[in-house]
Image (tube, rainbow, N blue to C red):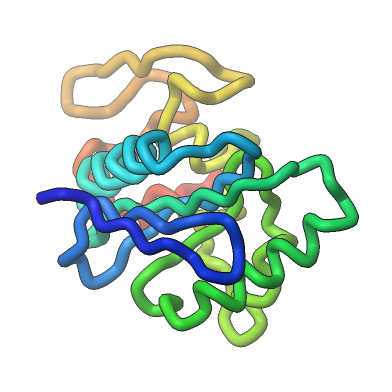
Length: 174
């Protein structure tokens, strides 16, 4: 099944749904001057795989915005227009920070509803996103080592491979 791309009208950007038939899709919003649909489509596919590993019933999605993240003057206005544009997708597309964006940029989307707990969760002081993708963690670039029984060695990787995303996000630091 091919990814579905939604071109945005009020900003120079797009949303890529990896599994167009999924009831809910989720993934971050990337802001960069040269972000491409092909790049974001690969990231949306990676999100689908992450949710699949965690047995979460959702598809991967990502948004791409073309702009300069260092432009503090235009950044807030750009993100406000983006949030207004994707507001109608709120039940279908869940998003949060990625490269070039921060949680504060999504305030208009969170006014009536709290951000998903996984966005701000940490495991042993490491962001949940970095724990789910251990190879990308800036502070912990390593591959997980699996022990018999399906439990990973290392404090940040202590959930069973069949755990749900909710359970992993709620895992208490030790």
